[in-house]
Length: 281
Image 1 (cartoon, one colour):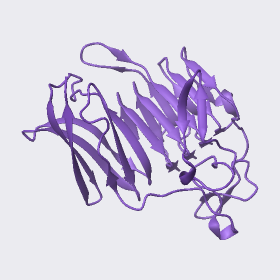
Image 2 (image 1 turned 30 degrees about the vertical axis):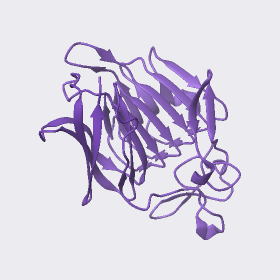
Image 3 (image 1 turned 30 degrees about the horizontal axis):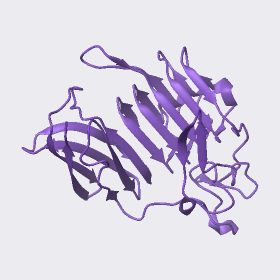
Image 4 (image 1 turned 60 degrees about the vertical axis):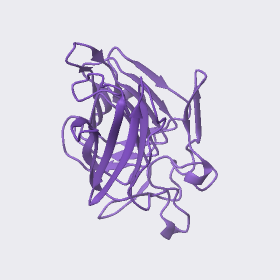
C-alpha cells in the first residue's frame, strides 16, 4: 500500500508475505493512518511493516505522518516493524502484538506513545502450507484486544460490540478458526459498498467510508460537475476489510478547489458506485 498526503483507516486488513525491502506492507508519506484489528506479517527483509516519510507539496509545505495502531499484529516484517527515514512522525500503539516490541520501531526525532497492553509474544498462528493466519485456541492474541482507547482526553478508537464476538476483541485480522470450535472475531464485508460522505455539505473536509469483501484493486476518484478529474484519493490493491479516508477539499496539486458539487467514484473488481458531495465555503 502506498499512502501519500492522505487520511486513511485500515480495519480488519491482512498484509502478508510480500518481499519488497522498504515499506513492503505500507509506505506512508505525510499522512494520517489508523490501523485496527489487522495482521501484518512476514513482509520484506528490512522495513517490511510500515515505512514512514514526510511529504512536501508544490508550495514547499512539509507534512509528517501521524500513525495510530490498535488490536493489530506486526510480526517478522524484516529488521524493523515500523521505521521513519527521514521523518518526525507521531506514532501511537495500543493493545497490539509487535515483534520484539519497541526495539523494532524507529521513529527518528518523532514521538512514540507506547500505550497499555502491548505484547511481544508469538501470536501462535495455525500455520501449515498454505500458511493459515487464524489464531490457535491458546494464542496470546485471543480476546486480549480492546474496544476503546482514550488518550490524553481524546477517544482514539471505539469498536462496537457487533464487530466482535467473545469477551473482548482479538488482536489481529483473524480470530480462532471456527473449525477448532470457537467463533472467529472477524467480520468480513458481504459486498462492495461506498457510503455517502459525511458531513455533506462540508467545509473544508469530509470523511468517506467504504467496504471491500475480497482482494481487489480499488480506486476512489473525485470529479467536478464537468466530469474533470479533481483528485485520485485511492488506487491500490486492498484486502477484505472496512476502510475510511478523508478528502480535504484539494486537488491532486494540493490546491483548494472552489465551492460546488463534486462526484465521488469507486471502482473495484467490476463494482462501480458514485456519491454526490457538496463543498460549501
